[in-house]
Image 1: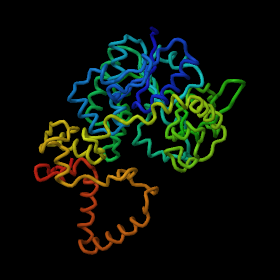
Image 2: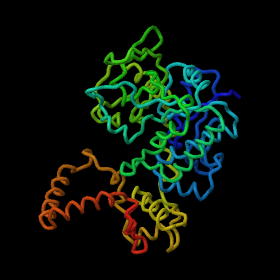
Image 3: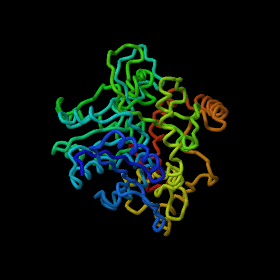
Image 4: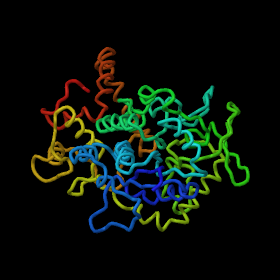
Length: 435
């Protein structure tokens, strides 16, 4: 066993993506053990053949059953995968005995060794990579920089930690916070696990945490605008795109966040929908990196596709009915404000959460591919619906007047949190604090 560990977390359908990360880790590092932590579970008797370094989180992380049920129901897939991150880090320190533990998202890919990270970990307890590292004004980024006020200073698709009592205490605190509030919820100013990490500098001394401005760490769509790729022989380097910084760093890894991975397995990169950033500009210097990543996934598409269609274990009630975001957050509101303590996955019985939702007509359309949880201009009839809403609100404003309309907006802002809509479950769940 090596003293260094790199791991990722994913649902079982992304094991193939995680294997691409493992391949790149092993290509450049011979002093690292790599693990894939699977957040959900394989169906009994249908487990595909996986390597020993693929571990099922529920079987190794010492999370109480009641807390596991609570988190796996109230959080969506992304939120759940991120909420078990500090529990996993603690496991690799405490149970496996590693001196350093690095987390990487499964959609990252190494282009050189991790020597820079390990050199820094010999001095610091925590090493992170901020979303952006160069002051840019007027700002030219594709993603509004105000979004980083919500997302957090660092992108914790990467985080490196050295084993110490202080690090383990930090993980305990992080576990506690994420067990309660690991939602991606703008009105609560929480972005899953990573916004909480903005507290780390308050808990650690200045010589214990490094917010690295190394341009070769975590090259990603949100910072393409500030970083340009240069190639010298077989080595990629990253420099400032505008010349605002004189740094020239070896490229360590890229974070290919938001790509359509199923399309990548066919060798296709769709420029329109490949990123979460809908208006991402073209950056030709990034193409060789993207091409290498796509080539690996395409060349290993058989292995990749073996897992891609495996269903997420916590997507449905135990009777097979899909769990919507509203169901998850109503459950969280019922637990947080009213002490609800029944297993939410169980659909049988008149006192089940499923039965309560059904009595209150809180199930939407059952047609396949009907998306009701998000609002964007990609939704069908978006502009027409918005025009209708504006017309209705103008009439409503004329009826109730200026003062009451302003008050109405304050109420609606709070009620837009799904969690406080527990009044839909009945009078016993009316929340008068709107918290």
